[in-house]
Amino acid sequence: MAEPSSGHKPSSSGQPSAPSGYPYHAPPSSYGYSSPYTWGAGGGGAAGCYFPPGTAPEIIHSFQAVDRDRSGFIDEYELQAALSSGYQRFSLRTIRLLMFLFQNPNNPSKMGPAEFSALWNCIGQWRGIFDRFDRDRSGKIDSMELREALLSLGYAVPPSVIQVLISNYADGKTGKGALNFDNFVECGMIVKGLTEKFKEKDTRYAGSATLTYDTFMSMVIPFIVP
Amino acid sequence: MAEPSSGHKPSSSGQPSAPSGYPYHAPPSSYGYSSPYTWGAGGGGAAGCYFPPGTAPEIIHSFQAVDRDRSGFIDEYELQAALSSGYQRFSLRTIRLLMFLFQNPNNPSKMGPAEFSALWNCIGQWRGIFDRFDRDRSGKIDSMELREALLSLGYAVPPSVIQVLISNYADGKTGKGALNFDNFVECGMIVKGLTEKFKEKDTRYAGSATLTYDTFMSMVIPFIVP
Image 1 (cartoon, rainbow over the protein chains, first blue to last red):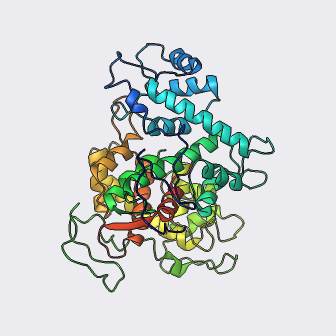
Image 2: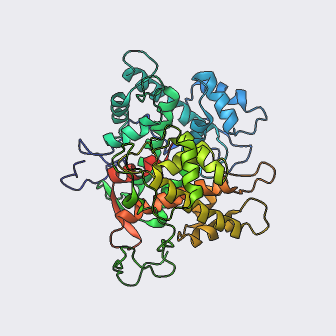
Image 3: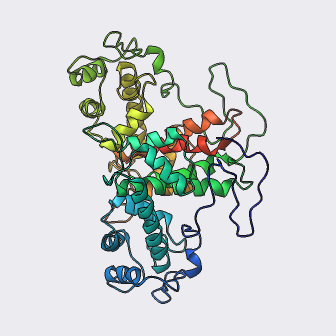
């Protein structure tokens, strides 16, 4: 991966503009999950659970259908059920990753309306990208298509990493790796989450970061869940 | 974590001596997995499968009992069966991690006698440490005991990382994290593997390393297996 030829200052939006070929690009504006907390439900009480203005009715409906006790928060099983109504039944592993990546820092074990809305929209965007790269409509994408799909999300992942990622989903018949949408969301969220963590430490936006052992372990271990 | 007060040169054994309180210590000599390849089975042919001199008969027997086609290599299911004879039936997730961490770079998808022998001895050592810290003989260790056990293996893992590690194994009744031996091997191998990867990049043995994005992703992704 080429190093940037000169320093890049963050733009006024807080999102630095990246030179082409840079490992991580400014994501599309509809993509971010860094801002849902401005609309968050606050410290975790039942009161004050707001959806962002303009939230699509189907998102509100899907959330409320599973939040039976009207607490304003859902757990991982409820999230699995809620996403099933709009998308599909994701594996619990993917659901846990989504809970972790879209968590409200004030209430990490539960998901409120703002986080759910951000997640729903993100998955909608990823569904569009998956369908775009699943050119033969097989319901699966291969390693080349995964790389292109991640690039279009702003992540320039080295081919060796793509190979490791996709080898976990090898087809029993052909031995070739291929991802269905659940797998794609899982892989993509791992890449997204690790990249965001790395970017936080790459304060100069230089494509590299100096990490202590403790920082490295703290960044990585949460992604390794059984 | 305290930084070392002065530079430390690697000792003649290739293993640097570490100041106390340093994040990773020189492991006990019986522990390493970096050297089995000196006794490795070579490029992967059926000929030339040697156990290191002095290998305990039970290790040879356990290996040969599952290597039914006498190829000199075993796959993950055979490894699971082989370890069952001496220890217990480990989860396939733990087995995959063991295959990855003890792999022969020349034949990463299979395990030969040298790697198996190193792995068997390592698990034996870890069994001893587990039993030492499982003071009430409950068959489980808690977060404090995990931290002490990892310390005794040479890994000074931050308490926050220990919490994340152990939270994945929360007891349904008490809500408190506790690890059985399978979980302990899984957690410990993740810590061991990530630490070894980090140490490779911390060439000055300074407790920190500068990583490019590509390097970071390549180091971490192999540990995140479904």
